[in-house]
Image (cartoon, rainbow, N blue to C red; front, side, top):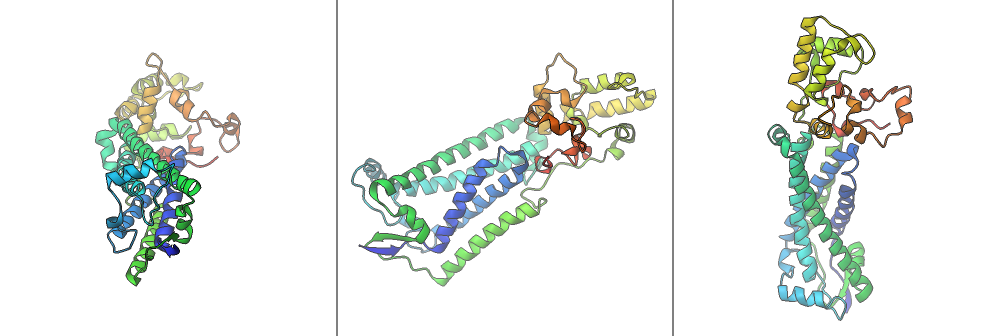
Length: 367
């Protein structure tokens, strides 16, 4: 028995990148401001696995798919010997052979459904055009995406568990080999050609470049914002002039039509002030607000606001809606009293583009 070189530098570096990015992509969805990072991580994982597929068809001993063991009888024997005398495999054992293929397939399915969800739910990325036709199914797309991601995580945990069992029960060098590249055996080690080494350098470089590029170029194809930036001054000059003169210009899609009608019909007592307008201007603004209310919008925020409302009540303030309260419940009330914010209704303090009808998660300013 001797120490033999099994995993080249490219295999080990890509393995580390996959582990780090896979961990990060599962931690970022819950932080709304990190959605762009989550998407960039997902696409980079897909690119890393794409290069791994190409690597699997190159003549690299132990890494090529031809060397994988997909024998069901060998898999059965391997699984039943986990706690006994298990055969040592220099390359991929039957379980890891299936696990790697499963991770590749599940990653592509997860990224594909994630891209679809990003387009349908957020109106962003290459599938942003689907928001206008499939927005009512955004929850379904999200659930399918989460299903694939959870199955992927289960396979990853099983793979990690297998490696740890090998290490502690059978004193295997599987874990250490992903650091130094060496295992113990009688077979010949890996000898990479200059073409294979160059492929590894190019694959890692392109993957990291793509990741960084998506983060520094938010308008790049894969993560570009497909939501239309509204120019309310042109859409309805009266709405723009009368509303922005006193407070933040709130997009009409943040309240249902019933709320806008009630608000415009009671301008003589508009949150304690008399905001009365002439009849023609009032009707013009009311018609515009109703036409562009939450019921007519394809935005996620509109659907969530509508779903949260008590249908028996009429909400005259966005900050009164259950959705707004739930979304902002973790913010300390003292924050809203700060001089640079002043009150909860000052949405511009965190949402720079709200007056252009944009409420993207990635645009939220930290407070």
